[in-house]
Every structure is written in C-alpha cells, then in structure tokens.
Image 1: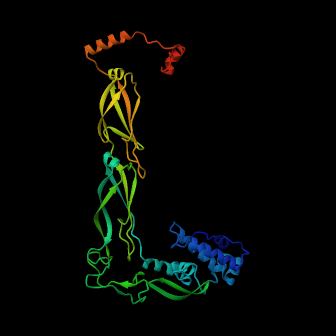
Image 2: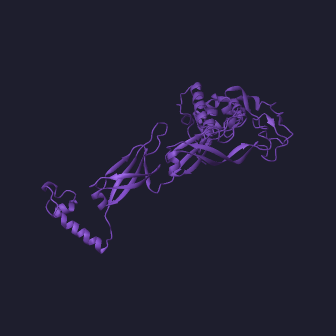
Image 3: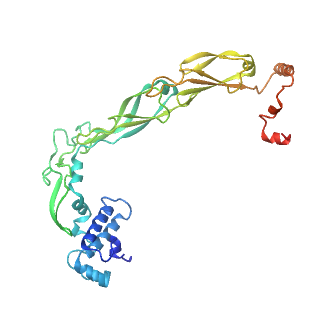
Length: 378
C-alpha cells in the first residue's frame, strides 16, 4: 500500500495555516486537478488526494487528531461525515466543479447554437492553372442535416417531446449539503442529456441524431497567382452546425504540379535556354516558349553561359496586387558530348585559328581549382 503524503504538503500550506487558508488552497487545487477540467494522467488520483487532505484539515477534531497521531489518528475519527475514498459529501466529481464554477454553463452551451466543424482538403493543380486562375470542383465528405428528417432527429410525421424530467430546460436543480455549506447545484439532465427534448420515435436514416455524412461537390474559384502550399478558405462549406448554428468553413490547400520547362521563383518564371557554342559566338534569334505562348528572343553574338534575359510581364499574376512578374531566360551554352569526324576537324581548325588565348598575368590562374594552383605554385 502506498505511503500517504503529509496533508499539509498536499494542500501546499504550513501546519499553522488558518481555516480560511486551507479552504483557499483547496479551492485552487480542486479547480486545477478536477477530472472534468484536467484530462492529464493522474489528475483524478491527485484530486482524490487533495479532497482527502481537505476533509481532515477543515475539520477541527480530525485536524487535531492528525496533528497529534498522524494518519492513524485522523482515520480513527472518520466516523461521521466522510470516508477517505468517499465523495458523497461533495456530490461526486462532477458536482464539486458545478458548485464552485457554475454547473449551468455546460448545459446552456449544449442548448445554444453551435457552429459546425471546419474541414480541410487538398487540391492538385496544373502549373498553368495556378498562373492564370481556374474554377475547380472539390469533392468533400461532410456532416449535413439529415435528408429525411431535416435535422429534427424524429421520424417524419412526429416531433420531439418536452423532457418530463427537466420540463424542457435540460437542467436539474437540487439542493446539496457540502463541506462549504448548503449549495443549489445545477446539473445536466441525465434523461435528455441537456437537450430539453426526448425523441420517442427516431428517424431511421440518422438514428435520431438529425445529421448524416454525405459527399458534396463545392465549386471553388482559384485566383490567379496561387502558389504551392497556398490555402484558400471557403466560408460555410464545412460541417453543418447544430441547433441552427452556422456551418463551418472549408480550407483548401493548393498543390501545384511541376512544369516541364518552367520553374517558379516568386512572381517570376525561370526558363533555361540551351544553345550551342556556335549560336552563342555568332548570335542568333530563337523561338522560345512562354506561359502565354511562343515568342522570339534575340541572342547577341558572344553571349556566355549564365547570361540573363528578362521578358517583362510574362510571369505570374501578383495575388492581391496588380501586374505580373517576368519570365527570366537563363542562357546555357552546351558543349557537345559527341562529334562527327567532320565536326571534330572543323572545331580543331577553328581552335587553331584562335591561337593561344592571351590573358593578363594576374588573370592567368583565375578559375582554376585551388589544388591546381598549389601544384604550380600559384
């Protein structure tokens, strides 16, 4: 059997604490550890320990016996009132919370209109759809009012009746004696569970709940410029509310498929344009794709890998702002990996015609790896 803790330590007071100090400490701890208020493991056991300590220390005779003889002394005078594991004097675990903090609140909240739960859904889109915006159909499984009883819960042709136990209030009021004196305690009616009505003949479709899960199609207008991970809120398309409460909302998370050619960078679109070194050296004009269609781009002679061309207004629409980003064209000069004999001969002759490339001494080793520089003493 586990050793009981010192009752003063349990309540966090010293042995000279006044009756009022003990009562204040108990109220604070009872609220903190009450199982209806605290769902953590061990909360109920802690609450029982606090209650037991209070039963002893709040009673003058039991406290005197405890101070003199310890737990054995307190237990010798349990006779009237409480037993150490008994909660009848407090009206049960639920009633003490009601007595301290207002039991009518929970019942009133049950009878008030309640908003339905929010729902979430993922929507996969093509790159172009995200750029220009699109209308999409989204399939949602949500809770709606029963299609047969229209949310009443009773079989068509019948209606819920007033609960005779609480007279339709959903609450039971009773007078109870506790350690703090006489209390008027309001609890939820056990027969109607706080609803105030009883359904004698429930709807067979929803089994009296008034609600059922159904698949629903929501039409969503996706604005131009949404990005991967963007979230859209569609009001009123979540679960149906109860007792006339509003429906919840639907949150749609956007997932954009990668594009074959384009990469998004904020409001800009990046396109890598490969050219051969002849085109880069001599210059050329090429047809390239854009998000709006094909266009022609002039490549100046002598262009190098990494050169950037910017096509104004050919990017992505700015969400909640006017205008569009640009298309950024990144030039990539491609060195061929295989050559015909003729190509090889022509390039060889071309290289010989260039002769030795002259660079200033300080530029000689620039661009070489550090390991090469060390070998040559650079």
